[in-house]
Image (cartoon, rainbow, N blue to C red):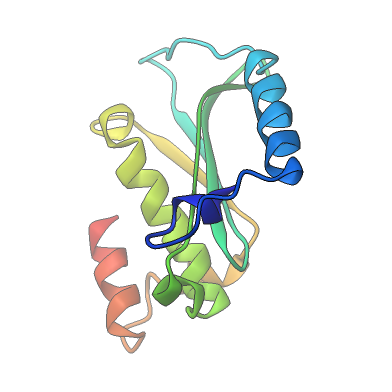
Length: 138
């Protein structure tokens, strides 16, 4: 259904769109139980990127069990879709920090990502300018 939001795209609400809307409505009304943040505990961020979207979860671990506080995702624009895999994964981390900035300021946070190359970017001095800017943001 996201293609319906594109500029100059004809609005054709097909049966496929109706089914997607119903599925989305059902999933939102049956959402997992979200908790209020405990400001004394560290926050955990889980980020991931695909070829066309990024998604993340903000939560906290209580008695060894992860509890979500907030979910977020976005589709990439045309330029972002051309990024390398490492850039897309870093975009997911930056998007997460921008999205949940109010939770993360002055609080300890732990980031989980499935792209292990990101941990080697921080000491690296000759990375792409875009990656270096993002590292400075974090």
